[in-house]
Structures are given as structure tokens and as C-alpha cells.
Length: 185
Image (cartoon, rainbow, N blue to C red):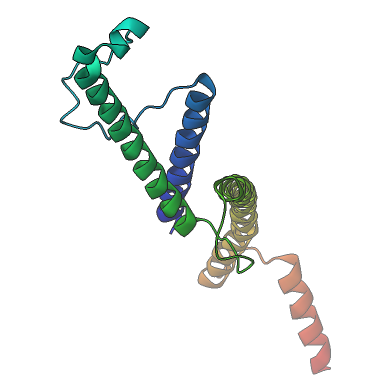
């Protein structure tokens, strides 16, 4: 159960990292695909280069421009599909509640962030409780050993008293013997 929880937390962290990376990329004005999903068709192609205005408007470069645009569109389509997939996975992992059937990306990410913090806090509390229980267990074991130690010695002493006639009697046994002899009279 703990392993499944850690895997879920790991997935949430990966999704959050991906979304943060995407937001940073959007701030800089460029889009990229997720590193684990390169398109095999585009892997070996050269990156598109910027054309001057004269080249853009010439009839010979329209094919290049169209190819560059379609490459960009495909990359963007793949990026959006991957993002959609990550958000769907995130919806499965996060307890969303019955308040609404449709969630915004921002709302989903905020709930994921809150859920991760809650899981981390629960893990911290569980770890603290485990440490306390281990400490208490060690204390109780030592206490049990202390309590068993004198009893073991007393049991050995009682066994040895009964086995020999000439052995010295303890004070408690002498007291019992005196009390029983007084009761006879």
C-alpha cells in the first residue's frame, strides 16, 4: 500500500514538474514536446530556420514555409495531447470531490498541489509516530528485561533452597515458619 502511495505521489510530482516546465516555456514564447515523446519522423530533421521577409514572400519558399508550419503544428498537437493525457492521469490520482464535473487546469493543479502537501504531511506524521512507537518498544523491552531479571534470580534461588537441606533459608521463609509454628500452639 505504501509503495502504491509513493508511486502515485511520484506521478503527481512528475505531472507538476511537466506543467511547470510548460508554463516556463510559454513565458518565453516557445513550445516543445515532452522529452520522452519525440516524434520519430521529426527526430533527424533539421530545426526550422527563420526566413527573412523577402524569402517568406517569394514563391519558392512557400513550400518550406508550409513544411515548417506543419512541423510546428504537429509538435504543438503532440504537446497538447501529452498535456491532456497528463491531466487525465492527474484527475484519476487526485480526490476532486463532487462539486463540479469539469475542472480547469489551474484548479486541478492547485488541488494536486494541496493533495501532495497533505500526503507529505501525513507521511511526516506517520514517520514521527513510527519513531515514537519504536522508541516506546525499545523502552518496554528494556523494562521487561529489568523486571524479568530479578524474578529469574529469585526462581533459581527458590529452586536451590528446596534442593538442599543445609541451605540457608531466606527471611521470608523463616517468617512463614515461625508463623506456622505459632499457629500450632
